Amino acid sequence: MQETRIAVLGCGGRMGRRLLAVTLQSDGCRLVGGSVRSESPLLGQDLGRLAGHGDIGVESSANTREVLADCEVAIDFTTPEATAQHAAMAAETGTALVVGTTGMTDDDLAALQQAAERIPVVYGRNMSLGVNLLALLVEQAARALDASYDIEIVEMHHRHKVDAPSGTALLLGEAAAAGRSVALAEVERQGRSGITGSRPAGEIGFASLRGGDVPGDHSVILAGDGERIELGHRASNRDVFALGAVKAARWVKGRPAGLYGMLDVLGLGAAQQA
Ligand SMILES: NC(=O)C1=CN([C@@H]2O[C@H](COP(=O)(O)OP(=O)(O)OC[C@H]3O[C@@H](n4cnc5c(N)ncnc54)[C@H](OP(=O)(O)O)[C@@H]3O)[C@@H](O)[C@H]2O)C=CC1
Ligand SMILES: O=C(O)C1=N[C@H](C(=O)O)C[C@H](O)C1
Image (cartoon, rainbow, N blue to C red; front, side, top):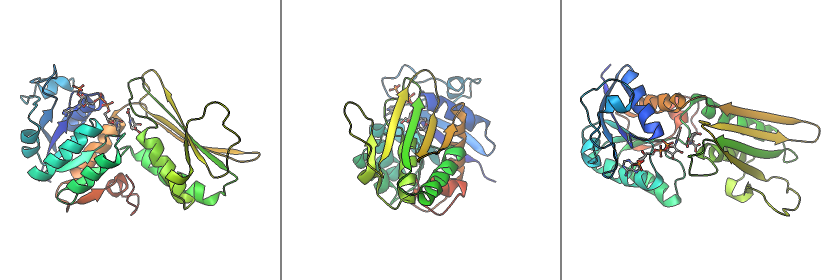
């Protein structure tokens, strides 16, 4: 099989470095570029060194357009603003995209959708096999149980995470809401404090914890009278996300333009779930 030429946008970040390393170690992949911001102290660094390997003779660049033009698939785990700009550029260069950035606004998502009219884009708020399987189980459990079972979603992440609830928590909330055939926006409750009143039936609650170096823990609790069901996932390192992203990069190469989700990549179902 032909090699997939991959570039990593935001290659100096926590995920960026693991994406470099996993791409370098993956059969059928060639790491051909990486971008950093023009102000970054990591500009011009060898990508192999950034990944914790030996030098590979490819340096980080602040010329994102050139990086995009030189690869077949770009993987983007940066910030919502940067991802929206990268999507517009990738549509111009005709480069396929794999996006893992969370905290995207409706406008940022619209930029991804617009790009997906011209290029194939995989968008996944969690690239691990386990979380995507968990989302299917949550949907099934929420469908099987009536609204006398209260659904609460708890997530914990490292102290550096800037968005809450996590993209994964929202993905799991959407899965639970789909199981109940309601829109999440109609029933979600993000955080509680003060005199909140008693809990309305049907609410889907979110709680976010931050601390230490936790790569990502998620629990979905379905609490009824006399029993409680807990479905959960714990990532023990970031490679589980990077491996999913590189798998998506290999999968998306050569696909028609469109917005795809990790369920498509993982072959877990026809649903378009990002
Ligand atoms: N979908 C999934 O499976 C996962 C998603 N994520 C998401 O990925 C994102 C990144 O997470 P994480 O790696 O922890 O965060 P980091 O802050 O460590 O990394 C983000 C990187 O993007 C860089 N960056 C920002 N703007 C640009 C730009 N215009 N051009 C090039 N680089 C840019 C930053 O550079 P600088 O430092 O110079 O500002 C930084 O190095 C988050 O949204 C997170 O939620 C994380 C893990 C898994
Ligand atoms: O910022 C992170 O680290 C993570 N972000 C994603 C999210 O917001 O769900 C995925 C993973 O949990 C790690």
